[in-house]
Image (cartoon, rainbow over all chains, first blue to last red; front, side, top):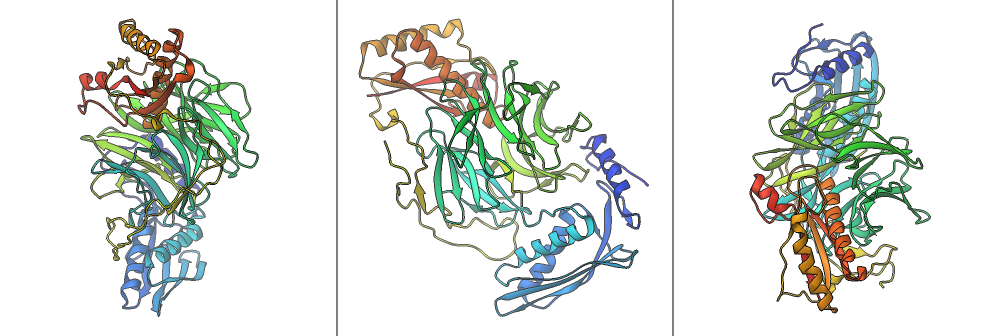
Length: 408
Length: 166
């Protein structure tokens, strides 16, 4: 087996070691194609046909792009280990995708499914089909159907925007033109928590996308920022300064009871992120002089410092698989780093060429969306911890930052 | 005090112009996702912003060192002048606005800006100003006064400002 760093040389050896470990776990019958970046399974889409309707053609094109973006596949012309066949056809306003996935080497059918969608939305049907294929072949959640929320600043006006995981369907979620900060997904893809100044002060809100409503979560004196929903959906962690200092608090949504998590009279806390089991928070604190990451059990008394390397460490995001991504000031630039709590090791994922900040994990625990700022302009990029090169997500004019990737 | 779940009116009405097609940079939907706004179950305290802004007097902003909320000795004179004014004008209230420079995490910068504003507030209270007359508001790195990207600009942007209301 031959391995090499991707052409831009931006990824650490740790990512390759991780890829090798995963390769060892893959099905022995996989044909592995190794070029730049991560190891891919050769997949053929020759047998996937579309009728002549525009929607069906879009489906076919988006499906192929989604499978490539998943990171797991290389579209092969011949000699594929996985064949995807089927068809996509429209009838009236209905779009139907029939999909069969066969492991050629084992001669085993991994998926045979008919998915229904709408001619008006062929991208959505393609995303769902791609995720079903990723799940069937790799046993991991796909990311094609997920969404990303971000702050967009265009012509001096800030608002929240949403887009699909491939950057398509960029759309504005708020129309305030007021300073807004740190959006995060609430329940599914129906809720967004964030902080907005549209009433003059940094108050925390929950947007109910389904009902088209915005509900105020916290408007205490001072700061109300960083609201994030616990994995069980029952509590919100956030930063408040109502008791004289920026500290972390957790609000139980059922009882309304607010618990103070940190009590640091001479330090500021920020950016809480929940552990996958909802029992711990990772957050930023400057109690040691500069912003560093700490982990604290929800009802524990003490916090454990997580980062010592890097002049500043901030913006942690805890992945479903237990790893923590964060931005670290290394030398003159901010870089995305990963902490693996099992190996107790920090790995640097980006290597200069701008400032890389605000990481947020995809539900596959493989991809990360983050902000890259270069020449004072900010765009979102997708990183791959298994070694594929960074992909730019946003292309529209403006500055795009503070992304959060939906968990489904 | 505001009652809970009070309907606050229609904010924006959608003007949907969703371009079809499959361009990945397809323009935004004009459709607004928020059609009404509800209060949460938690009551707001009165905020000074609802009052009239005092514009006939202004004070120099207090500067801060990088990643610090501590008030330097050289900045104390500015705070003494603000305290003197507030003691002589009992009907005036103050919002201390905390700011950071552009570097680093936006969310941490919000906390740092708030910490700076609270340090200024605590200092003024220590000089005898009634705590009920001083509120804080952090803008983090969101409202730079100097648009440059160098040490001089960063120094200007790390500041506490004084917004007076009557």
